[in-house]
Length: 406
Picture 1 (cartoon, rainbow, N blue to C red):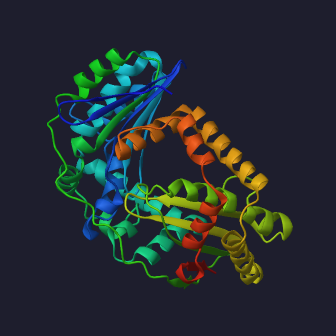
Picture 2 (cartoon, rainbow, N blue to C red):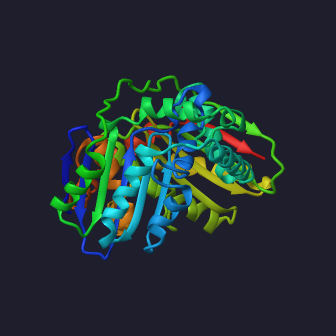
Picture 3 (cartoon, one colour):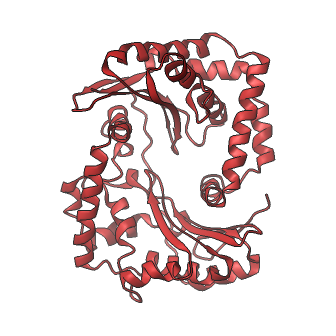
């Protein structure tokens, strides 16, 4: 996959990957999220992602929402603990319209007080809806359990209490501190010439004042295994077992990506799915997730089960951990596992919107993007000994934490 990187004079990097599809995607990825908030600001990164659509010096909220919808496109956004993205999908002939709109909302938003008040209520409803879904809530609570008072533990949505303190001044203060031009990637996947894309990027982003980042994130380094139990009025018991894992910058992360897929990835033949669901019928949903951050990472195994099956399910999870720690994969098992993850990566990249986010984040972190061929070679080079070593590091019994909702 051929791609190009061009840096504007203010530090914003423009990344483009050509595509022959009639549909194009572009977006602005900003290296800021909930971990960059103070305690009083908890939830403000996500709040900004919502209210940034509510009016600019040129447009009312309705005109922002209609600008791409009127031509069959769409604009959206998301916030994580380490990034915020504003992105669009549209027919290729509307590149100019999409880029101008993204630039307008990010750099010219006015944050009308009446709109802030309305959106506060929307997000409080979102928080309450989230609390009604224990299979989602448990992930946030688990990270709060293991990260403690560190900013990376911050819930992305924030709380009703913090939301009610956010006004235009607070928003502008946070953006002035974190929306740094050298931490922005404008990314494109679509049918447009590089020269045309650079021209549009210069036109709509080029005059933004340079603002280099002046702070560094405090790394997390105080992990202690912990156990928690919350009493909730639910029909099922929900459980997460996990540990700290490799960061996005750790060269061993590919070993863990493969191991995680074997253990409880998206394949129906993952070990945990075969054990807890197919063989014993204890759980409808069981999954393993590896989430790498810039300085640390988290491996989590989640399942929901009937309360009387909880202890048996926990024992089965630990049994699979023991197998990975003590038994090397056979040659055929390793070959199949590698082919599976390579196929999954290729299918994900075939979705151009997924490709947009992967491309932007890779350039943000590494200033490069590895081709499928490069990733395939890296996966093929993983040995069964390396997988076993990873299992013994990340699945060590004395380093595991656990959270139960019941």
